[in-house]
Length: 199
Ligand SMILES: NC(=O)c1ccc[n+]([C@@H]2O[C@H](COP(=O)([O-])OP(=O)(O)OC[C@H]3O[C@@H](n4cnc5c(N)ncnc54)[C@H](OP(=O)(O)O)[C@@H]3O)[C@@H](O)[C@H]2O)c1
Image (cartoon, rainbow, N blue to C red; front, side):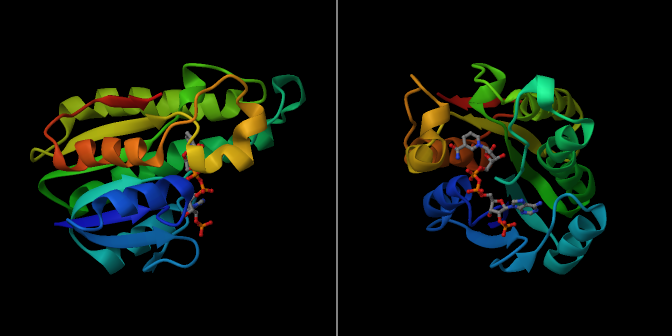
């Protein structure tokens, strides 16, 4: 089984890699230091990646940026960071990648707890998360050829405490293993249209 893992070098991507590496062949993708280069904010770059990689059984994305800042101060341009990257970047992986997925394959995208349990400065990220959740639920009913689509919504990972801890007061950090397992359920399980909340 061949898995294309976008954002494989990141905190979540590394958790997915660790969880899946023993069982599947993983092709890593990101802007730097991966098997194949991709910038998900560019449709041309996504298309080039799929031409290079060819057919796979599963696509998993753990990539996607967002601007963090107060709504009152956020510019439309800053808000577009999440739109172009986390929202459309991941959705374009689906739109452009679908024809490269074998029958009965799967797609797994990443959202996050901020759409359900808000903190300050996170409205743009929450917007992208909610958009992905709605897209996944709706797209699942018309995926062709037995292809499944889900998203994993992690809480703040234990591995991210240093980076995000001060922003997430009162949140219980989640083990990377649990996040990796949620991806595993999506990739190797049978469900579709699911939100796997790891809170
Ligand atoms: N960490 C957490 O606690 C947590 C919790 C919930 C949700 N999330 C969400 O999960 C996603 C990943 O988070 P993370 O903490 O794992 O991030 P991270 O450690 O910064 O890793 C991001 C990964 O994505 C790649 N990437 C970034 N922008 C890209 C682009 N435009 N095109 C292709 N690859 C790109 C990065 O590699 P390159 O820079 O080389 O491209 C890296 O491999 C984010 O959307 C984040 O909001 C994170």
